[in-house]
Amino acid sequence: MKKLLKLLVASILTVITAVMLFACAPANLDKAENKLKNDGYTIVSSEEVNKDGVVGMVIAYKQDGIFDYEYIVAVLYENSTKATDAVNEIEEEFGSYGNVYQSGKWLIVGDEDAYEDFVE
Image 1 (cartoon, helix red, strand yellow):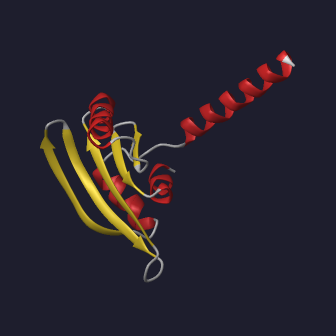
Image 2 (cartoon, one colour):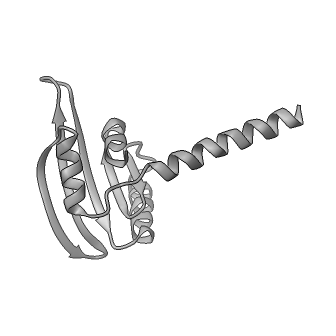
């Protein structure tokens, strides 16, 4: 039983590591905007900020029907530590909010599908 458990844990860790290596968010605002456009999103706003560790942000949505849409707000920070601090601040202020994600230097708020589109 212990061997099976060790094998199962090792397999899960291998899969998680592989997903982390292949899933990467865009490197800058231009690439983020292009990636979202290529995935069918309409860009609402994309701007450089350069304030309080924030480099810039992109706001976009994708509408498949009248009431069927996905949204995303992606904020690029100078480094991943500042992004982590921002995620922690949001969680302290609002509790565990399920639509806040972090991928490297990006803080992402949006639907799970939009998050997956962004980091693929």
